[in-house]
Length: 211
Image 1 (cartoon, rainbow, N blue to C red):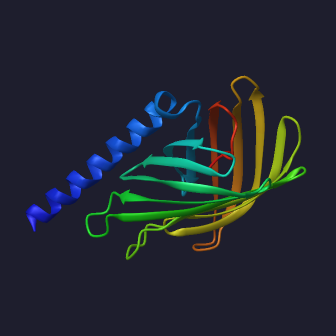
Image 2 (cartoon, rainbow, N blue to C red; image 1 turned 180 degrees about the horizontal axis):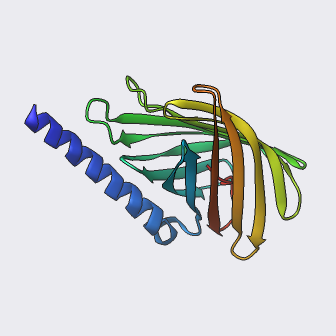
Image 3 (spheres, one colour; image 1 turned 180 degrees about the vertical axis):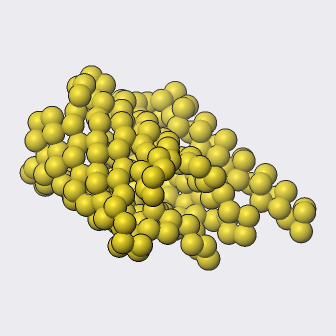
């Protein structure tokens, strides 16, 4: 059992190192990728818990892209990478797979999509660990103005399911830096919750918005 645990930790470490290398080195390997660095916080039951995500994306042509995603929070981490496909100018779908910080269930998948038509956009990220209870979902619907977005977001953050409005303001244009806040109602335990954060997008703009 100890040998199996060591192998799992080794595999996760190798994958996370590889993901970081792809994120930080993609510019030299492929050209100009898009990066998103996002620091956000969950305020719930009188506590504020920080999270950090890093995403990268590179389109090999007008249709096919490479994407990578790293997440770190209190007592939790995950790293996934995969491919995406631009079905139409306004429809993007992707699938990533990798590892999560779970001793019994190390595998993790993340189907995702992005739709954008006129001033409206819809983003979905669905992180799932087969056999575990560590799912993290986010579904964001926005009405987009020049420097401000307003919409509604539904999330599953491990044990809670929550829904509420979300407000996003672009406080700097080059590079784009956004601040946002979302007050939620948690339907699992009947309690208020909130998230707030800041993120920056670097490189050629692609389908990355936020997470």
